[in-house]
Length: 101
Length: 195
Image (cartoon, rainbow over all chains, first blue to last red; front, top):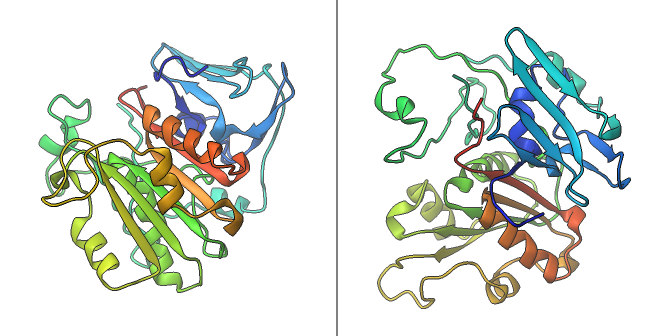
């Protein structure tokens, strides 16, 4: 899994995925549908140098999530995760993000 | 064109956001350092990402490990710690190519000079200041063992830098017996945020 260094992690995917998810996905917990590992999405290995975005399980390397923008559509595949668990305790942060000047 | 940047500032009443961007000769974000001028308007989305953060209700020891410009999001932890005035002791292990490559040098020197809550260890990978004891080299097991919080302190470890740097540092922390759950990492690279 660590053979190359052409990957980042789930933190780097946060910006792109914030166009889809209303709640911060980096701190969400996801379970890999392949090996059952449960980790924060921030810890996933993320490849962003292709035409889309691919997140892989840190443990088994299986694809957790794929996202791609094709013309006016965003395609999202999350079948590599059995579930995603979002922390809603800080939801007000997401609903009312600080205003930038 | 959309790119991701780390915020280096603490939350503040003025709601100002400070971004630190490293100027690279052929950097893909050179537009930001060469073309953007004062009063230009930029569209921002964020802040994004609530995982690689330090919150003021954390009072356990904090070990920060930075590679190059990976110092930026770690400054966004150090600065609010100054304001919060809680009891969390910080240590910073900062790896940089050469003395001239240091970010926030005045601020960091001032912090370490006053015996504050943060203890700083610098590591130089290519050229050191004159008379520096440790020859240029990457972070290694001895440095991790001698300068970072031992795992028994219950410390949280925050590692930020280019992917190979983070893999090396996190691997050394793991080898020292630290719980993976205590190690938070954030990687960046030339492909970061390319969309």
